[in-house]
Image (cartoon, rainbow, N blue to C red; front, side, top):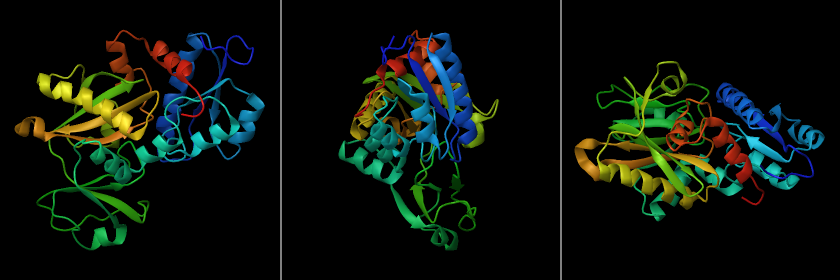
Length: 307
């Protein structure tokens, strides 16, 4: 168990909630992780992150921050920078990797430089996207810096016109060539890939499919050819390292099985994967013999500054 500033057991502040579009998911993640860490013997304090977060952390004086925030401010380098300034060890990736992973277009540039296959995409003004097709359908429109399939629009090949985007969409959005096929994902823990999961849904793997009960089912390990399985494991580690990730990350893929290995592409890297006992990354850790509590405890023991 981590040795803190003379306290036994170490005091862990679990950050959750926050102001992002993924607040509810973060609250669920945070509560599950807090309960698991208490079960592992840590002193745990749950913190719903708000504007007073620095003052609250100063009062709590934790040995470690377990970052269970999702979305903007929580996984884009902002809270990481604050924790670096306060010199509080924290879980998951550091400032640069978090910021880079959250910016989908810039992370793609890093992936291309590392020889990692990705789909073509552009950044376009929201108004331009609604006026006419900015690329040939089928394509996907999504915010460049949100996660969990928040605000994702799939424009089919037979679409009569461009999509009408919600007012909540940012002024600049990503437009990406649609990648057909199966949704696969691989967790990296430290520098080791755990396994591959096949995410099976009846339709588009959107926010509802990710979080609603019965929205999707997970086949783990994925029943895919050995070369595809091995490629996912290898590419996940490469993507993790290309962005400079630390701790746990999860790389999402699309695989067009009609094209074999050429049909496998990286969609994105999530530096703060969902963390409930039935989430993708804990499921993969369980397959490797780690309980949910042990998985959370590993992250606490891995925590540091200067990440």
